[in-house]
Image (cartoon, rainbow, N blue to C red):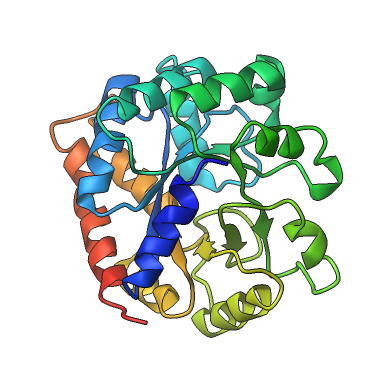
Length: 275
């Protein structure tokens, strides 16, 4: 089993802090700028990078990430291109974990066996596939684990104690707790309830628990870092990309720094919370 994800969480936990997990969509706003952003994330303070696999119908995502997927697809990004982006990133960074996040359709079309071989070879560490429930583990989850990739599952506020063991059964790397009901980036979580939910999940698993959906600002990240092993930020970073674009929707000289400056402020907030 590849060890970058658990090793990163363990190292940060040993330092008494949570990990910052950053999400951007591969190919947004174009493949060249996207690679520059991804390369710059670790230095800005990202501990783990989630790369969205662009898809035309990202049903769990809010308007910001939907728009990012469309920008990436419009710029010619594909699943093959996403794996190339990972390869290019790995040429200069062997340590930062990369998780591909998205939907099953592009993987199915690519071919599961071929995808897992190519993803592993490119340097991918884990997968989050939001529309495959535990009942479908034989489809992708179990083959991914066999191929040496972590398969990260989402738990939500509606995942009760009866359902949770099923969700956790083949999960590895970390558990992604969705802090709100609904789609990404649309509401601010109740931080008190998030801490309670993380504690409940931890009664069922030794895996790190990272919390995302609705984390937009350093103060949100700081509040979640107090009770979770990881803080996931996505929509806010994708929105930083969008607001940096010119009138034609093209990257500007400030696009990369718009993302990295926000990541740096989030990283500072997360690292300021000592456990």
